[in-house]
Length: 146
Image (cartoon, rainbow, N blue to C red; front, top):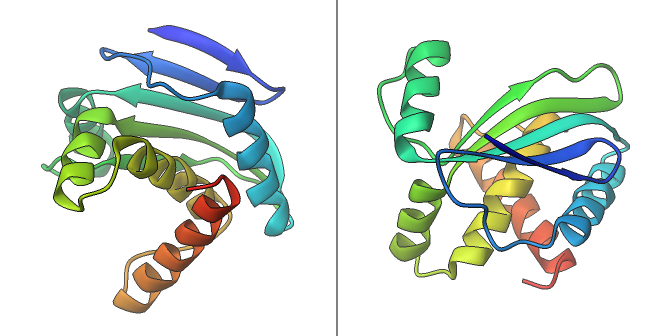
């Protein structure tokens, strides 16, 4: 595993994959600004970029799900401080970018902020919640120029 410290409390790591081409300082500032919009403070947030094989193992072991996904967020937040481990499968992000005809970078940033929105309390189980999540993702993507 490779660790890249960025900012005070947000880390970016890799597990069995490459490190994506993101600006760690810019991404960290963006994440903090979005959290502030929801009146949340940043605690300890670890992003772990991984492969489909890795996320399938985590999904099966911890959530008893036997399928690939783009993101798994483990929430350790307390009151107004958000903390968590956010696993992102770069393989699935790439597949979804192709499926939705989006640039890889846009889809990656969508998933990065998706985890933060979960930590801020946004659910996505029902169709209405998913629509609201997408709306909030789109607003956050506009804030970083995508």
